[in-house]
Amino acid sequence: MHYVSTRGDKNARAFTDISFTAFAPDGGLWMPDEVPQVTPEKLHTWLGTDYAGLAFEIFHLFAPEIPRRDLWTLCRDVYQPKEYPYRRNPFDAEAVTPVTWLRDGVALLELSNGPTLAFDDLSLRFASLYLQRVLPEEKRPRILLGATSGDMGASAAHHFANLPGVDLVLVSPKDRMSQCQARILYNETAPNVHHLVGEGTFDDCQNLVNRVLADEVFCREHGIGAINSTLWIRIVSHLVYYFWSYLQAVDRVGEEVVYAVPAGNFGNAYAGWLAKRMGLPIMRLIVATNENDTFDRFVRTGVYRPRPSSETIQTTSPSMDISRAANVERFLYSFLNGDSRRVRELMVLLDDTGEFQLSAEEFARLRRSGLSSGSSDHPNRLEIIEEMYLNHHVFVDPHTADALYSGIILHPVGVKTLCLETVQPVKFPRMVRAATGHNPEWPFGYKEPPEIVTPPASHALTQEWLRGAVSEIGR
Image (cartoon, rainbow, N blue to C red; front, side, top):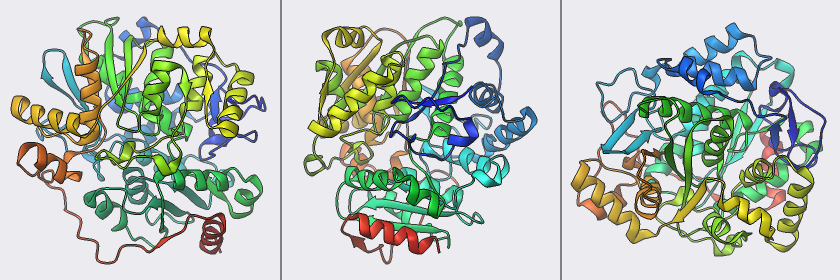
């Protein structure tokens, strides 16, 4: 298994070469040179496998150069159920990502039971232990740089805190996350964790960080790697819970299911698309957007036209307040069957004109691909949160409400539908209280983070500011 660029650079790399690298030299994203296939017979052999064992099987497909014993030990230690204790049912002690059925055929896939109450814990705990135990020392970055809308940064800060020889630099937008998100993020103050706050949207922060990460000379000089949703190591981590949840949900291997996924930066959704390409029987993958509905409009029209960052809407599901999702390029590459020339052409159009349009033939294929989408707004989220509480006695967060709205109301298909719960409702108490009249409680045993006494100072988002800050940290 080797990795090539979505834009045509064919200088193949190994998994360990690209683990913390944001971009290929030509500006593309890393992709495997072939998609491993999982046959129904192979799925049958995985029935009854625990989460760690399934993670080992899937990572081995994409990183065969890692010695099997090292990979098994890593997966075993990362995916111990005790590391993800904040599940709805505290007596389900063996579940890493429980499938919680709401009613016949509709379930929540709980992904946010780790230490920062977000799905990012599943991939970033793996990334941290992988860097410490497996990645050769000469390939380890000295600085990890990323942009965060709240949850990813909090998880990265938790799992990389106090890691010798690595500084973590997180750029976040001012006043663009909930208070609970901010408390978990900014209260991580380990000496190697550095919070930089920018005056703008998440898109502004991500664009600025990406320009730095694309500068090979600067990154090489300062030993900079990426910590963001485009890392392939994170995509493979997401794959595991698609396969695991499928095997928990179906009555027989081969039965088709539907997944509904909050859009965000499209890493989670792309992993679902990749699982489908690998052979997992997914009838439909529904990508849920909020009022920032770039991807929904793309699926409906074939035109990808992200809003300018100044027009990105601040909503009550803030982790989805993204106009240009980072992993869409990967989806294009897969959907276009590895046609890197066409991908490069579309991405150049996007950079130069702010949009691109699929051809009539490409759009027709998209509509037949099994990918679907929907969008919802603030009243829709309140309606779903209220309905989940009244009818099923569970609280859900606004991002999960977006997924439930698109997955159940907009696209009822009569088959089992698994909605990905990527963050716990306690992080959004105002929304839950507005919908239900009740405050969600912190999970049993969770230590509530203190209030933020002095929030980090904010700065104008400029190249000079970010490069200067990173250079100073790296000294």
